[in-house]
Length: 279
Image (cartoon, rainbow, N blue to C red; front, side):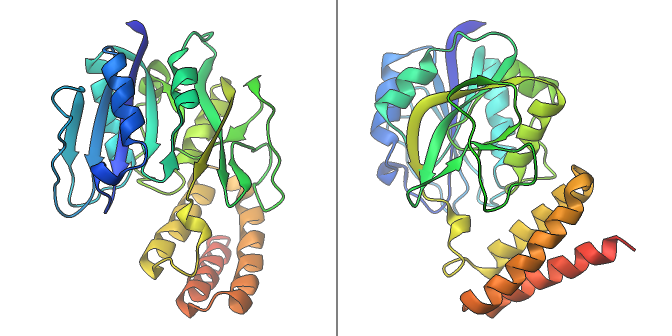
């Protein structure tokens, strides 16, 4: 197994590869590091041409049925095994990469207990990842320090670097969480297996769609609350009561602040479903 071989996976949805902000940096990195590969998974309705795919070790897979992230990541895990890569880098189109980030992740010498490396992610001038996750995560966020930690953290999927052997030990990515809360499930597994995370001294920016209620479709929001319900009833039921309280607070806030009434109703229905599950 090559110590510095990296397998990247980038998931696209209604996004042109040519217009993806990180494309120039990624293709340059692949050209300079022949032991690394990129899997492009395109969940858009129509396929697209990838001019660099032959010379830059890019594999393109079109999934017009849009199965989400977990399926794409499992495909990348197979690719990583095929290419003898030790680390799998998860990317999406909404994170802007930097040369500093790519330089940092190529230094993959880590003790075995470190199974994940995470940059600091900013959205709307606030750090959204990683967060300390010793307790239920609400609006009062707390952040882990830079460096290796064995404290429980939660990090969004994009730009995280995962040890391939650990992912294979988990049996791959959990298809019960095809998109939302897959990151929560992954980070929960780190804590359950008593592994460590390396918080990198690198900052990236990300456009987090779940922060924008006004522009979110009701179908998208219903998928989010369904994933929340599934997670807190099947993975961490000890936090179910706390999530129920948070749903009630969110319902009240959305009633006064979100113009799309379907969003408020979906939150209220999710709250009622959580209450019903207690009976």
